[in-house]
Amino acid sequence: MIRLFVALGLPATLRSQLALLTGGIPGAKWVPPENYHVTLRFIGEVESWRAQEIDDALAGIRARPFELSLRGLGVFEKGGRISALWVGVEKTEPLVFLQGKIETALQRIGLEPERKRFAPHVTLARTDRAAPEKLIAHMQAHNLFRAPPVPVEGFTLYSSRLGKEQAVYVAEVDYALA
Image (cartoon, rainbow, N blue to C red; front, side):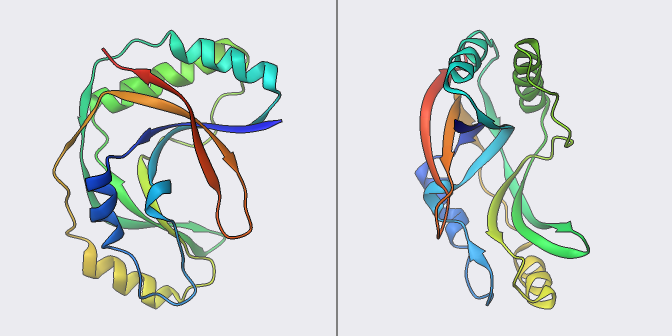
């Protein structure tokens, strides 16, 4: 079994900018900059033969390159507790188009439809053990964050191994936009 997801990798300059928004919240589990990405579709555990089908389906996707803009901070809540701190991604037409093409391609090969609504973001921290007031203060202090747009010229199929400290993501296949 292999655990997969489809995402946009981020250039080193943008990862460095995002890393400046981290730290100073006891109990927060900060995501290392090399793991920053924008998830387009979480797939989960699949058999290795299924991974080949997924690769074939993604290789057939056609979409144009576009620009990605990040701005503002927000949180996700689960069961009344803040579970994650994230940087927002502008939900542009080309981004939504690409995500829709990926979703359609994966459903065509028999994967279940994604249940969550597409909410593009970059996770900065898992925050189950952090004080809510510290998270809210941090979010308010950095809410005007805005990064210059970066070009998106492809997307990637990643594998993910859950580790003790953090997940290890490996870029398995890159797909170019043209």
